[in-house]
Length: 230
Image (cartoon, rainbow, N blue to C red):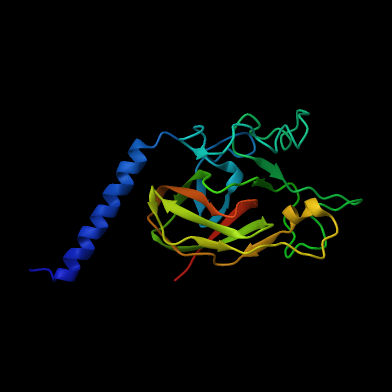
């Protein structure tokens, strides 16, 4: 049976994508992050993918950051032996967590567009050119859309690679700046969700998503809640 030209093109494209994925995963030296609080390794899709559980492997392999210190864990957050304050404190990616205070509310403030969970880990202090990898395990081949839990005091954009290949144009990250906010530093703590931020065609099995900070920076990225879509 002779195949139509379009069918041949689609088959060739599918084969090339599969080969590219295989080559990337074979060469990739990073690996899923695990600890006593996160023992599962590769994060599951569908499901909530935690940015702070970016891959292990170090600078230039699992992530790229503009400086070698974690500006959250162990610096802003005291080095006191607790899991949240010292989370990945010796790595370059800047991490912190949501803090609910009664006297001066921080992440439970009245300027939140959505209120995040307490003690929610996130990646912050972001700058254009930085990136981090997230190894995920996809249940079924299909189209997936993430809701992004974030803050952004100036707006900007991010992009997502799938196994080293760009998935599409940058994703706009709307600013959460509010001129009515009386506490200047709290502009970094106005939480919001971008629903259905983009659509990604993901193959079943293990994949590596690379989150790039493209423009703006100064975002806190907490979670990508992936759901199947059409």
